[in-house]
Length: 68
Image (cartoon, rainbow, N blue to C red):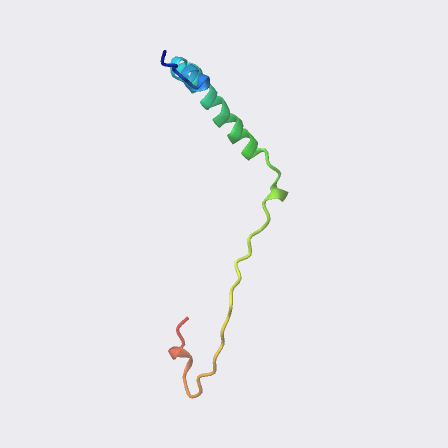
């Protein structure tokens, strides 16, 4: 019985053609950067961080004692 060698063709091709993988990686990176810069600004809504203001009464204090 002969041993059958299984291989994933895409992986073997990638190892044999390193320069093609480098070029493809650079192309995908540049295409992603171009797409990111060309997205309309309406797609990025303003982010409003909720804030709470608490006011308390401190009778008999002067304005100098207030520290914010």
